[in-house]
Length: 415
Image (cartoon, rainbow, N blue to C red; front, side, top):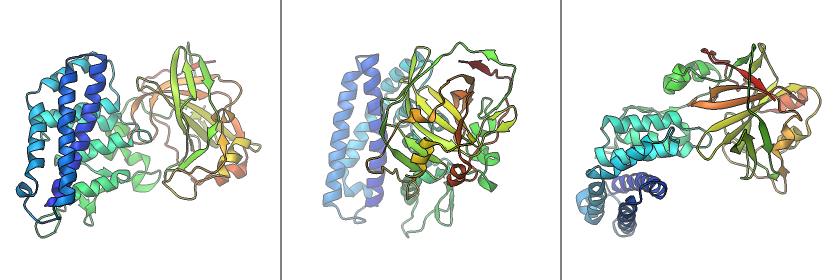
């Protein structure tokens, strides 16, 4: 029981810290009177953390019932929940959020956490808010948000399948269901373990099944990739790229080869600036032009300060060797799932781009689960070459989602 208390306390503290951080930010930009409440809550969190640390040091595991193991921790938790029970903080936050056109996934999960503390885990609005956070979360850069939402839903008793990348946290949640005999509830688990959601590109985990666990992938109306075919509307957008050289940070995440980029590289669309987060590869190209795929495509993922996502797609055709690809492939990660930083190797993402930045533009989605929509795609007209041997050295023979329905969208051209 002691172990379970510590786990519950740690989960609650993590959720509350997210909520407190969100409140602090909104207070700074909107309602000053929330500052006193945030400060008070922060003090309570510190006291609860001290109580938790004290319980780690003093009380041996599995020794006393939860109520007797550390009553101070129980009091702190009661005080923390009581601070939100009146709903004033939640009401203020919801009022502020209503004035914004869009919410980032991080703010969405913060709002969900506030509803959890105010209304409880079984409240419909709490569950809906965490589910919305899952739909909004961009996979490769917001994994923490995805795991937070999934673990909260699992703790609330919802039938949620935990992603394999959240496996450690999922197992901790599953441990809470153990009874006094050490046996665990088999609900939502397979072979005695938390059920992981795996996705891939073939078989039962292939793109045609993504919608089973990620609803937007199956029901979304603005999904990517597309078959790019005219007639095209004229785009008023202009692209300006300013990519910087930096240390090579390369990752095999099990689905693709991804290069994480140091802060400082930017894309400007008109007057709006986006930071380059990472770029990765698909084989063959996910996008088609006039019904034809390129050998591969590189997707450059950017995010604005407001949380908007923009992707530049560079089509890669078979031809002569690419010096940029040669550097990347010579430094492929030795292990899957671990970012690799080869010594004294630098890379400029701009070396992957063609000289001309003419483009096809459309509104789409992430091309991997959870298939979040609202992503602006700019597929460059001019392809870049790499050799057949370089295509063959890419560790994934197939990691491309098939083209999706246009659903009345317009594709524009510019540059």
